[in-house]
Figure (cartoon, rainbow, N blue to C red):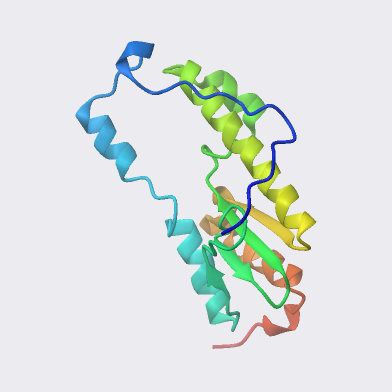
Length: 166
């Protein structure tokens, strides 16, 4: 198991999500939130399938590394994360202002996720790993091919991708 390092910055406190703190959740909302996956999300699986198709082999969610990267390329020492746009704070300066319900919970929650991402990046880099973070929206149809190509280039073997007339 990866050893915990002391935090470089004060840890952001996230309030408990409960009725006493003024938060209330319906059973329907609770069920919806319970369906959100932390592993094997659609964007992550799509990226894995594309990389597998090009002949790349990897480990998924390696518990031996800090942050349990979504994909681990041991030969190249690359740890790849597929980050959800909302959960990891994509375009946070603008999106932060748009959160209206339970902002006292969600803003610290997402900022803590962002802080943890920076800490995990630093830990992996100190162990000699390169960290690659891919945003969920980069794996939508319009940007999917470009994102896969960017990952392949980072793996250092872009000659594996070629166009065919099939």
